Amino acid sequence: MQHKNILVTGGAGFIGSNLCEELLLLGHRVVCLDNFATGKIENILHLTQSYPKTFQLIVGDIRKLEDCQKAVENVEYVFHQAALGSVPRSINDPITTNEVNISGFLNMLVASRDAKVKRFIYAVSSSTYGDSKVLPKVEDKIGKPLSPYAITKYVNELYADVFAKTYNMEYIGLRYFNVFGRRQDPNGAYAAVIPLFVKQLMKHESPIINGDGEYSRDFTYIDNVIQMNLLAMETENPNAINQVYNTAYGERTTLNQLASYLKEYLSEFDPKISSVKITYGPNRVGDIPHSLASVEKAQNLLGYNPQFNLKEGLKEVIKWYWENL
Image (cartoon, rainbow, N blue to C red; front, side):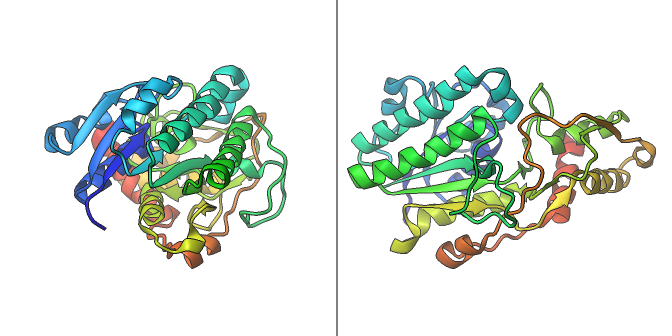
C-alpha cells in the first residue's frame, strides 16, 4: 500500500500508540488526536522525536466536533480508538461514558463523512455479546448488553452501519477481546486485569480475583490487534468492507489459569513471586462469565492469522513490564 494520511484517535493510549508506531514504521503519515483523559504523552514522545515530519499530535476532544473536523483534514483513513473503556467505570459514571463513546463517536463519523475519508475503522468490544451464552462468539449472534459500556459500543456498530447505508461510507468494526500488551497502564481504578496483576505480583502483593476464578476470557495480545487493524485498512475485498469482526486469538483461559501463568513467568525474574497468594472477592456487576471468539470470519474475509497465543504474549509483556515498571 502506498503511503497514506491516517488519523488515529486515542493515539496516545495503549492500543492507539502501538498502532501509531506500526503505521509510522510502515511509512505512513499519522495524525494522533488525544485529550489525554486516559492516554499518556510518554506513550508517544518517542514518536514525536523519531518522526518529526510524518507524525502530528493534535490535543483535542472527540466530544468537540471542531476538534474532529481539524483532525480529519486531508486524511484518507481513520482508526477510531478513542473511548472510555471499562465496564465498572461505565456503571459508576454512565453519562460521561455515553458522551465520549456515543456522542464522540458520532462526531467522528460526521467529520469523516464531510472530509470524504476513504474508510473508517473503529474499535468496539466483546461486551456487545452481553448475556448471550453461545460459545464461541459469532459476529451475528449477540445478546442483551449487561453494562452502559456495552450499550455504547453496540450503538457505535448501529451508527456505523447506518452511515454506510445512508452516506455511502466504508467502515470496518473490530470487536476487541481483552487486549493486553506493552504500554497498557497498570495503575488507576480501572486498570485491566493483566497489567494490574503483574504490578501487584512484582510488589509481592496478592492479586484479587473477582469470583471463584473460573470466569474465562479470550485474552488477545496487542500484535494480533495491530495485524487486524492493518488488514482492515489494506483489504480490497468488497465482501470484507462494512462488516464487524471479532478481534481475538480464539482460545479461552480462566482467571485462575491466568494467575498461574503470570506467577510462573514472573518467577523467572523474581523467585519469591511463586509464593505470593491469590485472594478472591465477589463477582463484579456487569461481567460476562465466559468469552471466547470465533475468528473464522476474519480469517476468511481479511486473511487474519494471529501470531501470538496467550502464553507467548504474556512472556513478551512480562519482559516489557519488568524493564519499564
